[in-house]
Length: 94
Image 1 (cartoon, rainbow, N blue to C red):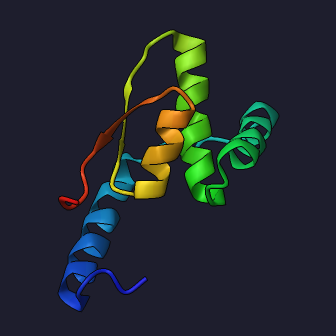
Image 2 (cartoon, rainbow, N blue to C red):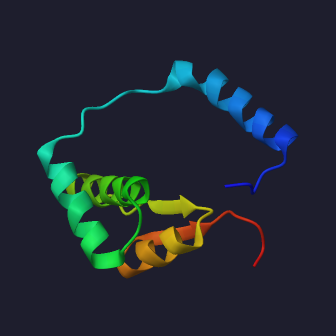
């Protein structure tokens, strides 16, 4: 999207590669996909943002733990608030 300098992009990319050893891949079940569609319909966010939001909603519903939703994306933050999540902004100051 052109928001990072080439050196910042490289630093982020290296960090992602280093962190991959700690990732856990999960299958996207029908419940998550259904919730994702609902999030898109309710908020108009993009697919990957909707997956993140839907995952947080399902986690919260299944565990009854109201964890904060950390984001650096303004539209995702607005959607999280509208969906009843507790968003925390970590992006640049507005």
